[in-house]
Image (cartoon, rainbow, N blue to C red; front, side, top):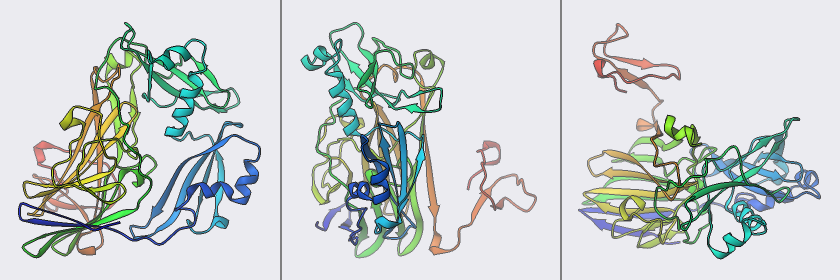
Length: 424
């Protein structure tokens, strides 16, 4: 681990790893499978740890963890939770919730397809190229409520009139469904760049602290969490935490906890959508040249280039890149969700303005040619001067009878209205 310095446009940026004390389970999630009750429950079964996530209280240390273990033999998910330092505190519940597929599962699904009588030879010869599609699962619900976990696999062919087709793989039985219902239809439509995404996959690596100064005066100070370790069930992209400007707290946390894709009628008729809830904790490759602060965080003297800039899925880095341009510090990462590629970006200007940006792209697929909309929902947890949170709404003319500004006292949904110049 090393502290890195970036300089440009009068700004000096210091990026340093945040030291975290060891945690018995958080540092080695696979050790969870050795917990006595869980080991007894899974004895003799085929199972796999599919997800592991620590929760925090906006402090520096995790206070709890959540994990999902899938039992293929009994077609069920075991949800575990507890203290990241104490195996004895772990509790688990039986659930039908289906976690997102892991890269390890996808590779096992390809191995099953290579043994299929119809698909094995063309996959091994390269005539068919497997890729991760949307939706990621084509689960089947049995009469007794059991859910069969079936991974969707896309198959691409350059030399066929049918560019894209989809199959389902049941890892519990090693079986292949050649016509899964919960998948896009086979199609000769082809949109997006060729999928590559083959750079190395760095493991978990904590947070970094960023300090931005100008002429010796501190402007910005904040923590950064990479998408791989971001909060929420489906991740939340690049997270900023404890954001200070000129020594005063501005935001406690800033991220995108919800990301949806919605297809209109034309796409739906071809099996696309109608909506997908996408995840933001799977990092994709992009071009970022520089020096690593710690695995997954890179200080770049020149601007990083995502798929939107380079028009390619190739890259040399996964994680968060930092660079300076136009008196702004850019904090950027590229993420993958099936064939989608998302760019999570924050721009912090010397004048105190934060500009969040979210980009949308895709690798080869039959759906994004058709009309669809991406909906990214930012969550900004303000912490002005560490004072208690107050949310106010402005309307002109007023709607509350007590002036243009009024307090929002309870969680609610409020729509923009141009006629009243509504803002918050």
